[in-house]
Image (cartoon, rainbow, N blue to C red; front, side):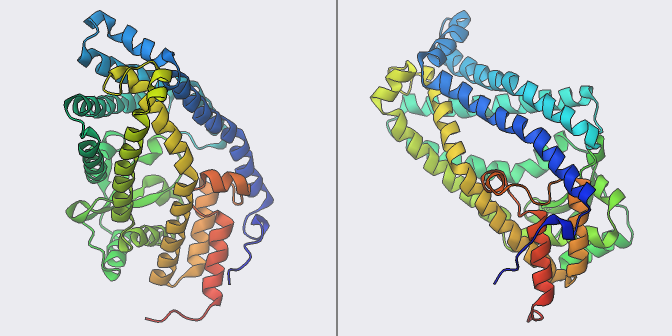
Length: 387
């Protein structure tokens, strides 16, 4: 039986709870509006002739060549979405400033946005060249593309910690000392091989706190944000790390990668079936799918699929996070410190301890702070764990 989590008043002052609610109410409308606006843009381009006309016009200076339609089609879509989302992202940043969560200036913020665009454009362009190259070469293009999509998900999961993460943060080895020794000892006790303990310079952007374990095999490392080190006690840092080790112990990253790869392959098969629907192609202004003018339609269908799968993905994520919490409690045997750590994370990140249930079901990737604290109390009240 699960303990009733109750309300936030038992663990957070009225001011702390009100502060978290205020931030949530201030930024949630903008975050939701950004999602809806992006979806609306893709639907408007993909389910009308507008997208096909835009691709044709963008490729006209290059003579309308096949490669130009693919390249400029990808470029137009990525840049259009970025331009649409920019005002919403800027507003969210402005909302977070009075809450003390932003330490980065506008110059750094713009640099990060540009860096993300420079990463996104080649990835999307390369993917679309593969899609339309195969679609024009073989009737079995969707089989090869499904296999390629699965392989790409696995490759990105492997490469992201060592290639993409350093583009946005600097990582330095944690200085030798009691905390580093404690974290490595915690990993050793959990029988999780860890190459190193690194400190990420998150304070360049925010005061929010976090830690995680990333990488596979020889690239695996514990990463602690410098904001966590400056605000939390060493024991609380250990508890955060124990939670992240739980993800490794239960192979959550590997399972998530496998699930993502399978989902990508299944998505390709479903998209292939839909994009062979003649009525849908005509609606999008394309004669056949192999024509790059169908790129906006492909993007619209992918966006619909992502929106539909979102709540289920969040539910799975919450389940995985609950299991990692349980692992941290079993590994440390310290529910009191776990509760203190949850309070610390909630207050430092100005999170709502108990957000509205519909909002949490649709978008919440972790249990609420109230739920996590209640689970720790239930653990403490239960019989001692065996083994």
